[in-house]
Amino acid sequence: MDATGNTVGFNVGGQQYVKFSESSFVSPLGHTNESQTVSGVFKINVPGHPTWGTAFYNDALQVKGILRGGSRWRVFARKTLSDGKQYYNLGGNQWIRSDYGSFIQ
Image (cartoon, rainbow, N blue to C red; front, side, top):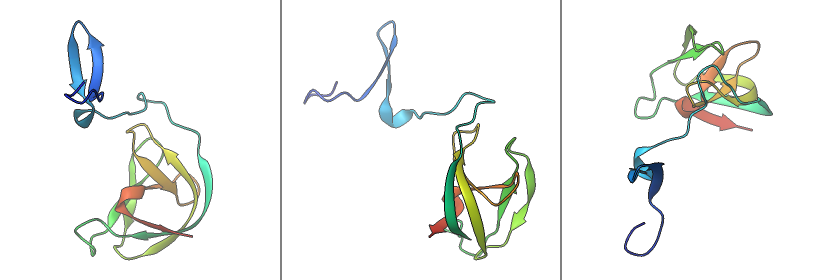
């Protein structure tokens, strides 16, 4: 707790604490969340590097190819993969990280 009584971390036992700001939640390896159906277009735009392309992956996070910066792709689902990051489905078993572009409905 901070001076104002707000909880600022996790008690991990034995009087040991981890700050919320220094932690994150991830899915256990090999575990994925259920996909959520979406319908829209995803425009590739790597933050700070608008001309860069980015990789797309299968659900085992193996790189399957590169998509050109600024290109647009129809997406069908959203899902958190085993690295704890959110991805959009490009069709079949092809996924693009959600933070490497923007979703347009």
